[in-house]
Image (cartoon, rainbow, N blue to C red; front, side, top):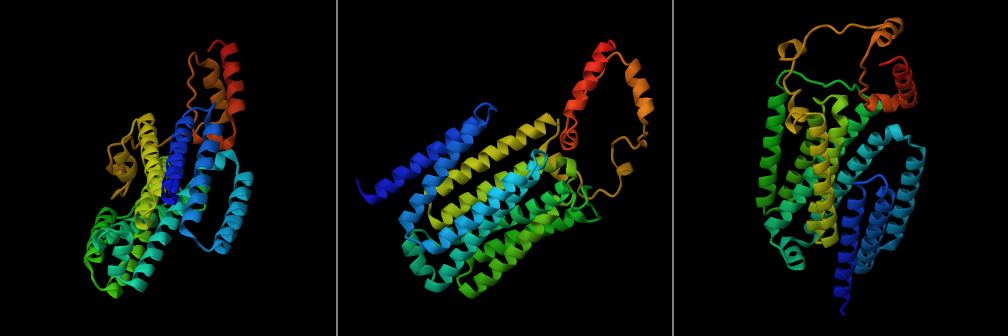
Length: 344
């Protein structure tokens, strides 16, 4: 068996472990084991890739040490109620990694030229430029969008939906500009011009990531983070095409598909569409202009709540992220038992 066949076989094993690991994540009983299996698959993929590419191991080892320390310390210190914030950061830096891979590949092309690069990769310059720009675009949007989502969840920025007049039009114009720059980049034969277009695309992608998350309220951030998780997988898959790595393509597609399925499940659980979550705040100037209930909410004191619950014959608890943050689940259970004893 040739060395290339061994490499491909290892990639198939790693991809299979990814699939089984993600399948086990669907159950609380098997989630821990599934996470471990997926981790073993990723370890196999990383080791085999390092052996195959013949890279400089000094930088690789340094990166592994630094990354392990940061990830281990963060995972140990973070509270379970802050897990969505940590996931947002992980998504963001995953997108940044894809952006940097695309940028590094462009610098490689600038050094050897499109003709030599196309012969080495066995692909056309148009396809290579397309996947490079796509990896950069999705990665950049994921990076800043995830950081802004982290800020909203952690309270570092306002959790309110930030809207202003003309916001929808500005976002549409930015999206058109991103697409135009991408087309020009793919068809540009001059590497200096392509580099300038690429940098312009990076700036637009980073800004668009913030602008896309800005009009979404903090209560919808878990859905947004799930969607950004899917985007980080797609960015990784595009980066896999950039560097011609099969296992990265497969792993990215798995993350992208599973993240999108989870996003759809979360939207269904909230009885809302994904479009409503992402775009309902675009162009909004005040609540009274919408179709919702514009009546003022009425505050209630603890004493009033006591009398209402004491007289109630039927009570429904609706748990949510706020109760998890307050760690009030045990108190709510005790309250439920008291209400049942009272005949509710």
